[in-house]
Amino acid sequence: MIVGIDLGTTHSLIGMHGADGPVLFPNPHGQVLTPSAVSVADGAVLVGQAARDRLVSHPGDSVAHFKRWMGTDRETRLGSHRFRPEELSALVLRALLADAEAALGHKVEEAVISVPAYFSDAQRKATRTAGELAGIRVERLINEPTAAALAYGLQEREREGRILVLDLGGGTFDVSILELFDGIVEVHASAGDNFLGGEDFLQVLAHAFRQDMKLDPATLDASEQAQLLHRLEQLKRELSARSAVDLQLTLGGRELHWHMDEARYAQLCEPLLQRMRTPIERAIRDARLKPEALDDIILVGGAARMPMVVRLATRMFGRLPLRHIHPDQAIALGAAVAAGMKARDSALREVVLTDVCPYTLGTQVSRMGPDGKERTGYFHPIIQRNSVVPVSREDVFHPVHAEQKVLRFDVYQGESPTVDRNIKLGELQIPLTNHGNADRSVTTRFTYDVDGILQVEVTENATGKRHELVLEQNPGVLAPDQIQQRLQALQALKVHPRDHQPNIALIARTERLYSEHVDQREQLQGWLLQFREALESQDTQRVERHRRELGRALDELEGLQ
Ligand code: AMP
Image (cartoon, rainbow, N blue to C red; front, side, top):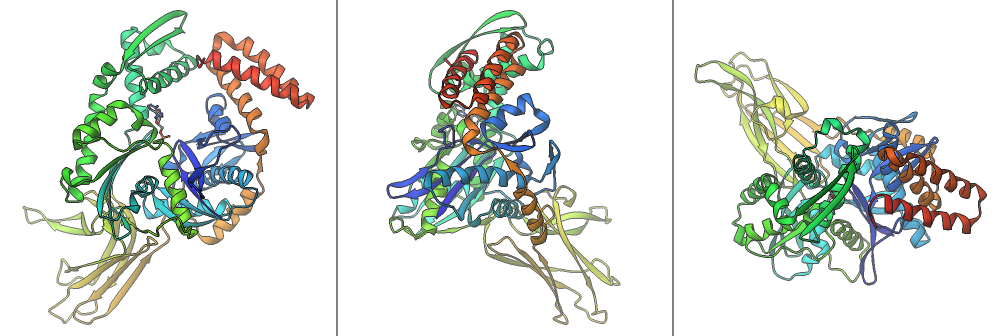
């Protein structure tokens, strides 16, 4: 059984391809979106909603947004444990797999996992390692925009086509152009803004609220700030469905009333909408396309639900974007379709998926300045960003000085003209043996394959002598023996059982509200005590009743009813 997984920054989802198409598996709360958050409580690991609530009440023991650190060595301390980003991702994967296995009644052994199109080799390898640490074989990594296109069934079309995928998540904005032809889906160009997402739109509302209410943020304590943001997040989501929303809340002893309509909200967000245009235009330019040449525009990511984003896409391309599949489920459904293809589900046409090299790869060179002085530290691209892989490119280099004995190749990835702002991948020193020769040039070939392995081959042109460097082991990527060690350590970790999750999550939510609502602390503590008592009684009916009542009371407190 192969499942499809969207391992997202804010949420993760798991699904499979069933008889009637892709389906998603619910978590113990009955929801298909599981927050990508991990917390350690009483020495055991918690994943999902409870962990997200504990970010507020137990920040030192909880973590989220670790997808951003994939491919780095950054470690997070939770309780007495330290975790690498791929280990945190593995814990999320394990929780998702437990949900799928509970629904299916048998073990899941393989998965297709989606990754952003711009993910580097190190980030892709870290994602594969996360799968391994979660005890599954990662059949394939699929680019998120490709998954979105599969969810819409665009691969089934007979004719060729070009699709633009706009993905506006919580913290990032990704733009990709896909090309479909002869059953092949190819990522043609990808661009994005790693610091633009739904969170920024929330900050616009927070700023407007403080200005309108003449509220000095310094007068609010941390719990009031958290409460305000929580209410504004609800308001933001409501503005995706209604043209105006009224907000009432008590802050610092003041009763506040606020009215916001969608038109004003969109006007306030104009600078963010302008910023969204830049990567869209860059992707179109990189793909050497005219906007009219695009056949479809797909909107994905929770924040793409905002009407202003739909209007932006409609205005830029003169047609309505596709968005009838839930924008926060499209990638997971597409990963499930890809999983179905892998399992050779006869209902699906086989599609070949190709990838691009998401970054420019090149070497450091010296350049002669206008003053005749030589300056080093310049980046010389050999494989340009968005080249379809496998790809092989070569270039000829000459030593700068006639008497030079060694030629040094520093290999970099990145988009900056100077190497100090790119990432160094490795180096190769070539002893120049051909002193007597007039031709002291070398030919350098970069070959990048589908598994993200870069081979650098340097040939001395006069003698034909070859030197080689294979860049496989990136910094920030674990070696196989290290993976085995980490696997054992993770297996020894205690995990809160899946069927206790709804109760644990309710306690975590009550504790979050306790830290957010100073005025209601006594009441919240009382409820917590009653609920714990019910749990200790082990009387299922009593627990059930208390859970319903407490859930309702908390909804009311959060203004959800
Ligand atoms: P994702 O990373 O796709 O889960 O996106 C999460 C982001 O989408 C967060 O910033 C949410 O605030 C935002 N979001 C989710 N639902 C809505 C909605 N109905 N309207 C506006 N923004 C939303």
